[in-house]
Length: 316
Image 1 (cartoon, rainbow, N blue to C red):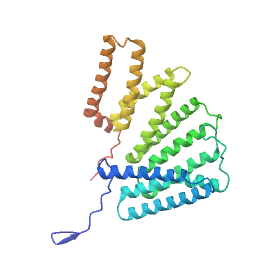
Image 2: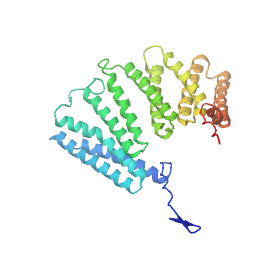
Image 3: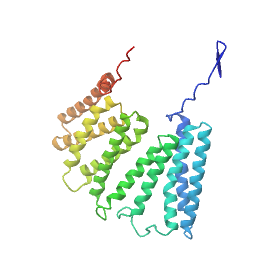
Image 4: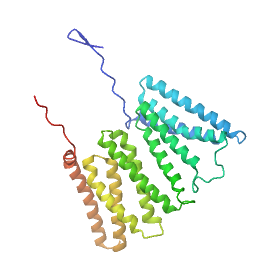
């Protein structure tokens, strides 16, 4: 309580401690990843006899322990550790689901999940994504969307094998490209509804998936590589233009890579790398990126405000 001029004021609401790059958060996040890896290492170390039963029981125990720990920590006001405990509970959902499916003897042991489609493996990814959404609804901890988006991307790769079994590398790349684009669209809609922090992982992992698909078509595919390089160049240039107004650093990162890599690729193919015109053009490309950064810093917010609807002034 605070007293001012003889009047006792109500306590100020506690400010939510957002994750940030400082020593406690580094230790919390690294520790959470280490705990998750250790849990799955323990699952792998279980003896083969009654493996399904022990995996299921141990996974349920981990899940309840992490969920209970999250509830306890959140109740004490430890929002980031409590949110990470909830994320750990979500990360255990695949082990719980697989252990249960093995226990009731419906898990397809003879199916290669990488190349062949199985409805059960697809269901595990979907259940994990739904569990992540439920955990976010309970905690409002945005990092859980990392697990949700990863589960969606894994589910999309499982689904790719349903169209052609075994799925070809081009099918996988196309699926990654489409799934990534859809996730970015979801992120844009979340931004439009002022959920920027929650949309972060949809942008980062969505663009990563789309970029992986384009890189495959540009480098590793058997067809015309221009179908990878040209869309990468166009998308990269557009992302650089838009990144400033929408204030998304992730778009700027992928935009720089998507613009720079194709330009250098076509310069290498069309010019002699050991002659001065190549070096001068390379310098011009770097200056163009540097200059665009200056324009974004000076005018990016102004450009962005032109697309934001402001409420009309109040009439007195």
